[in-house]
Length: 248
Ligand SMILES: NC(=O)c1ccc[n+]([C@@H]2O[C@H](COP(=O)([O-])OP(=O)(O)OC[C@H]3O[C@@H](n4cnc5c(N)ncnc54)[C@H](O)[C@@H]3O)[C@@H](O)[C@H]2O)c1
Image (cartoon, rainbow, N blue to C red; front, top):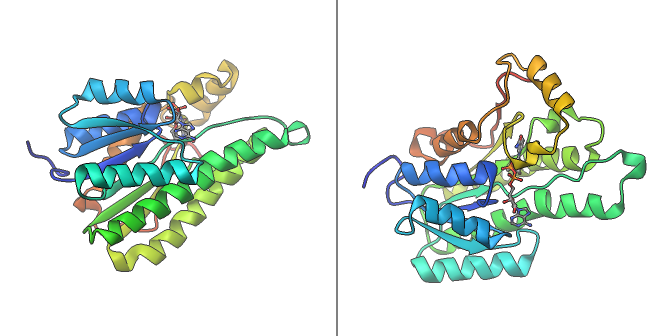
């Protein structure tokens, strides 16, 4: 086996679907061993089985729970005898609705997964990398172009995805001295189950506004993640990279 990520261990959250699943495939293609982690264990297992269980394994995780994240980190380090040095925060949810009608629960849920989840995973896995004296860490956080578009009906989601950009920048400044790079990606509209619930009319408007005239494919985000994970991106740190087909 070879490839730019040969010898690396990666964990991808939200790996049971969409961008997370495509990322597992591309990281494995590039030579990494991959842990597909998701709240939906069955979906994570499907990802791992599809890639091949010699290279990929599944883990059940709720990124919004300290206990769940902590338990997963410990079991991974004990199983692989090292910490993953590629960490992809792809778990995310939407609970769209107009602000005046938004239930507190919908705000809290989106915050807990998208922003607090990114915090818990980043903190726990960075600690594990440092404790294991791992070299060349790369953490990649999924923000969204919605952090800049700030669409009506997405106050909770837009705020968390803006938060992910700030969080990423702070983490990049704090972790640089440990050789851990932290970057964010802002995808545009990507064809995944998350976007399947967006009304057709809105998707048509997005296509018209997008210079490439189409939605993105999950693989088109995964390829950028694999690049950021690799040594080819060794001087990219604290960046927020738009992958939108030019949609602003
Ligand atoms: N699809 C897009 O157009 C788009 C655009 C911009 C940003 N993003 C972001 O990219 C990421 C991936 O999106 P996607 O389109 O692949 O979504 P998706 O809905 O296809 O997949 C999300 C996955 O996250 C998992 N998940 C949800 N809550 C979790 C939790 N608490 N713990 C662990 N796993 C959990 C789900 O089970 C699911 O498998 C998200 O953070 C999303 O906000 C997506």
